[in-house]
Image (cartoon, rainbow, N blue to C red; front, top):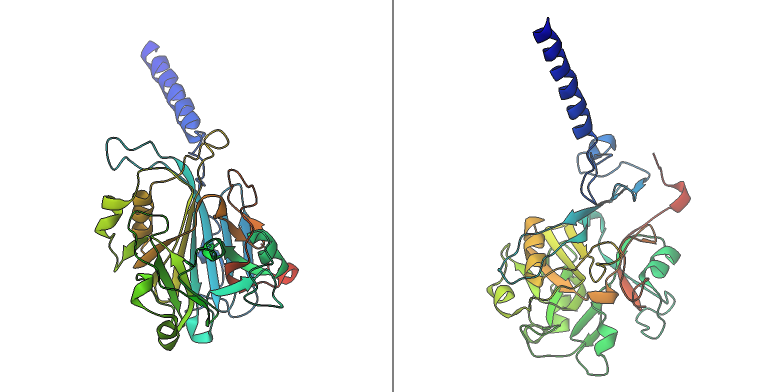
Amino acid sequence: MACVGGCEMKKRILVILLALMSLAVLPRGEAEEPFPGWSEVPLNENGFLDEGEFVKEDPEAGIWMYANSTLRICVTRTWETPEKIRKRDPNQEFNCFTAEIWCDTGKYELPMTLWADPTKPGNVNIRKTVAQIASEQGAVFAVSTDLFTARLTQKTAGVVIRNGEILYDRKTGYYPGKRPPFETLALYEDGHAESCHTAEKRGETYLEEGAVQVYTFGPVLVRDGEIPENIGKYEDRNLNPMHAFGVAEPGHYIDVLCEGRLKSVNGSTGVLTETLARIMKERGCSVAVCLDGGDSAVMTFMGKQLNRVAKIPSGRVTCEVLAFGRTKGKDAEKP
């Protein structure tokens, strides 16, 4: 009988331990189950809705989702703790926002520029926060760009094309290891992207080839699916808030924003350039390029800012944003 009682007690202890394990807290930024999965959304064979809009916002779980007949977006927030690449590298841990965006380019769903002053496209003198521009103009998803206006006085804006129009076309040298090194991110009407040094291609050539948006910043983090050798050779080993945009395949875009300089606020240290390159490659990018980071880097969904910024909570004001989709707002379907 003593043996039976002892066995029963062991079983009870085991059950209690299993129950406690099931209540363990997950690391920051992770949801128990990413929900709702796209299986809960009535997508057609092309991956979009037949009609209407679907919107899901769950900031606590770190998931934001959107779909309509030509656009599908999923933003996730994860807590990243990548291993050191070199022994002397600082420890990295940070909130990472990853947006996957699918566009039906055949129906002309493409990345677009929204201006702070929509009545005067190209007006660089009117500036607002990214969230203000997105909210006022009903953007589903919008992010900061290359902050070309900060380089106008030095005449180093590079190639600047917005919505198929050349704003600036200025040759600059290529400076690996500098910030920026002056490499372009060109987004084309067929959904593909490419990058080169600003001196390698002029604005008119970009337009002839079908570019709709061209940004100048860099460095290139991924080219032809691989990380360029100069990333590990020239880039510094400092931690910073960083922002990168890439393309996995035509019409499938990847935007990643890593928080930083927030160690005392939420633990985010920032990220190494080489680590960000690895993240973009892991996300499946065939090409990816750094846009302006630091206090300029802002990501929004349905007009609301998702990430935290260290010194300027709303991010630097800007004359334009890179955006996807226009929402019907209150008429969108929300589960």
